[in-house]
Length: 99
Image 1 (cartoon, rainbow, N blue to C red):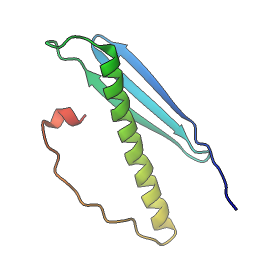
Image 2: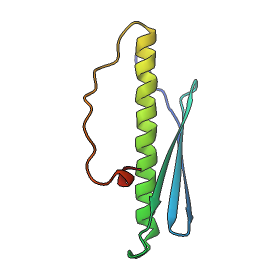
Image 3: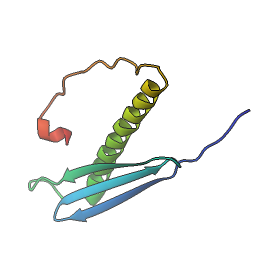
């Protein structure tokens, strides 16, 4: 029997003084997860709010995705199945660019 489940996701964006913050909230019915992301406009760059929104939102969604995967891994462990092995790759670029 096929089922359909809807998980509402809300994305909130806040901008002040060249910094955009994003918060994304996922409600599964049993769990609420919140991801966060930030983007900062360099003083040398032209301030384009849409770009800050996109970067902050993408980072918040990436944070949320990681949390959701960790919850799923813990749930798998709870039913006796180990989580899949994840290869750890070294980050490239500047460390603060990954924030």
